[in-house]
Length: 333
Image (cartoon, rainbow, N blue to C red; front, side):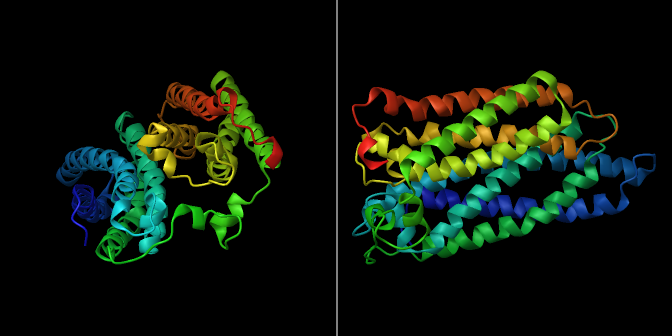
């Protein structure tokens, strides 16, 4: 294993998070089984005290765990110099292919953790804790993901060896190679531009209408468009957005924009992308979790406004090199 502060922090932090989630799931099972908010028994009072402690602890742990996605990306990018043939995070992930699964799982856990924090946020600010059973049932449901996360990280980082000759992003995201990455890189640019801008416009318009009128069907439509926006944006980053930052018509890597040469623009780009998606999903999930006595409208409007602001920032970052760069893709559409 390569000794790197990021690797040590990731393995230690992910293991601690998993242990905490495992313990909370065990206690949560007892809370689900015996919870009775109409009771004033000693057991119920004990469960109420316990759930406040556990919920606060897990919310804090999961909030910190959100950062592990960015630490993972930073670490695999930072150690790429250890491998022959690697130029960015792509080379590191290719040095042990389970790394791609670890990255995908990290993204999934980012959304899962965000949703659980949302459920807990609503529950703890509502009288009688109406979502206790739902939030602990979801925590138990999500537990295998955290266990798998530890396994993937250990297998990935322990399997890295500087002796391995890996492939760079130019080979993986080449239109002439095979695989999903090359397929995305080879998508026609002009149709992808139309699709991306149309998706952003539809998401913004629907989000604005949801913020203005808070209609349930609009809130659900916004949540659906948030998911669609995320996937279309990732595909567009590989297909054409990254090209404007590199000013090279054949360089489709989504990781090089995280490096110093490109002013680390990838970090605000991905943070705003994830943030705009998560806060767009929140109102819809909150509506699904709706229980008696839960005042949702005020929170939903705040989340929608946050999603719209992050969407605007993301779009401006994407748009900047397209407008102010002398680079053009007209001949490659």
